[in-house]
Length: 183
Image (cartoon, rainbow, N blue to C red; front, side, top):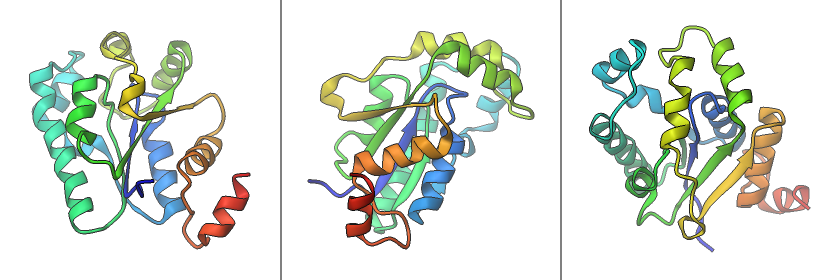
């Protein structure tokens, strides 16, 4: 079994990537990177004005996130990174040929996610763009080895689910304790 050294948390905007990714990185004691930090100012401006990004807009962003992943693998520093990764070709850029990368797709219904987006303050992504995210979403095929976790519980429950499913040990716990706690 491949040891995962990078976990990519994927899902539509508002699904909880930042919250779950941050919490997961803290629990594991790993580095964390927020996908939004990789966007160009032009992309942020475009989304802030209510316009969806095109594939051409996203490509440099995806390549920047992939470079962060490669840096973690090359320097043996485990990390958690977020990215919507809505389409298979995006997921291929981010994790393709990298067996040490585990991809987790956050799964939630449109109404729940829309309510979260409406409640979110100070973020450039408009709730009005959610339908474009769901329109672009290509659910992972079985051959992609993408783990799906529901977001209908608390973020802590989602993180516990991810840690158990991937057989990871939280920071400060030895492998035996982590294995026993997931049984």
